[in-house]
Length: 161
Image 1 (spheres, helix red, strand yellow):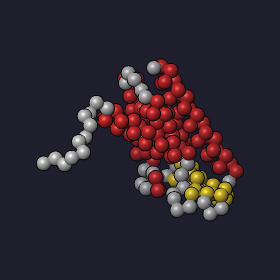
Image 2 (tube, rainbow, N blue to C red):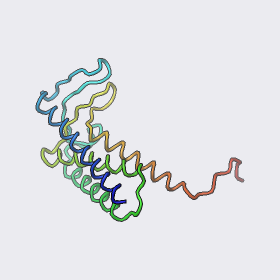
Image 3 (cartoon, rainbow, N blue to C red):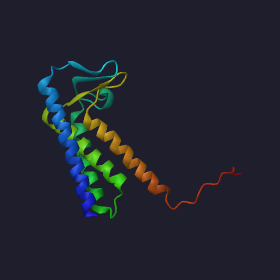
């Protein structure tokens, strides 16, 4: 079981490192507002900063987002320390969530805003940390939902009166 927890930490560190590397590259090789076409009409690298949450909601609530980031990281650490068994799905989700949260938390602590750069047509501009957070939460929810379903009697197909 210690091995699973080590892999979670390694995955979180890899996500954090990849996120930081991409953000540093964007910030040092592009001008704020600049776009580079990757797939015409579909995908661009567009350099913006965001002091809010997803879709630029709650602009300038940096202290709130820093507190939420710390709560998520402490909550994950606590959960991993007290839960005796961790599934692979939960572990991958926790690693992605932890690494993504750490990546955006770093930005907020250093500059009060995150660097966003992944720009799909008809969607908000986001970063690798955001994608890791959303994917990690989805995997954790799926894992917890599956655990909740284990041991329950099968649902009957007929209507109840």
